[in-house]
Each structure stands twice: as C-alpha cells, then as structure tokens.
Length: 155
Image (cartoon, rainbow, N blue to C red; front, side, top):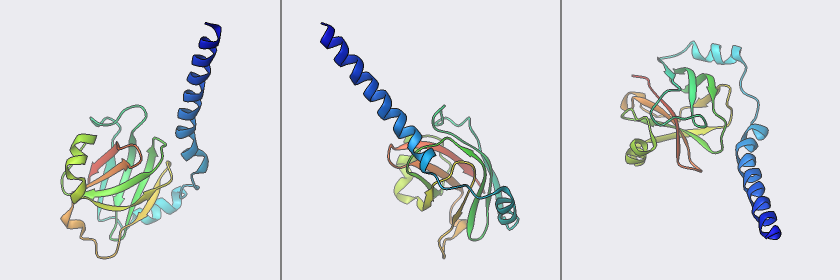
C-alpha cells in the first residue's frame, strides 16, 4: 500500500511539474518586448485602433489579453498584456469571434499574420499585399493547445 501511495504521489508531482514547465517555458524563453517608446511611435501611423479585452466569452484566467491595439498599413501594434503561453498566432478574420468554437468554424478563412512571442506588447508585420479592408477582427490563438486567447474588432 505504501508503494502505491508513493507511486501515485510521485506521478502527481511529475504531472504538476510538467504542467508548470509548459506554462513557464514561454515566459523564460520570450525575447524582450519592444519598449513603450517604440510601440507608441509605431502606433502613431494607425489606420484603426481597438482594444483586446479580458472579459470575452472564451477567455479565462489562463487565456486572456488586454490593452490597446493599433493597425497600421504594415504592422499590428499591441500595448498591453497577454497571458503567457506557447505557440501564439495572430490572425485576421472577417467576423468577430470570442471563443474556441466560433474561431474553429472560420479558421480556414482566417489569415495568419505571424507568431506572438512577447507578452508585454508586440509589433507584428502585416504581409505585403494584405487587404485590411477584407477583414474586421484580430484574433490571438494558441495553436499548440487550440485555445482562444483574445480578439478585437478593428472596423
């Protein structure tokens, strides 16, 4: 009986440590976020301004984003915070979504702009030739776990 209890307790701690590692690794390996002056300077050329809000239907205490977002002709600028996590991607969509199920329905039609590696603001380039008028919404999605992080309608 004692060996069984030790086995179960050690397996539980191993699972806890693995989970903690998945959460902490992106924080430890994240490159430095752009400084506030760079974010503000880049955002001055905004064609659209919006916000990521923490209280969306698909957001929770581990999956959220908040802060000001500016869309310029060639960049997306975020001044705020994101819950840390692995494998975040930034998408443009034609309709506003606010949870996993809604995004999965339209993901095939979404345009993936790039990776999000920093959690205290980011600047992501928009690929040349992207028609911003064909889309309305920015979505941050965790590709590795299929988790909705946040979204913002910019027009």
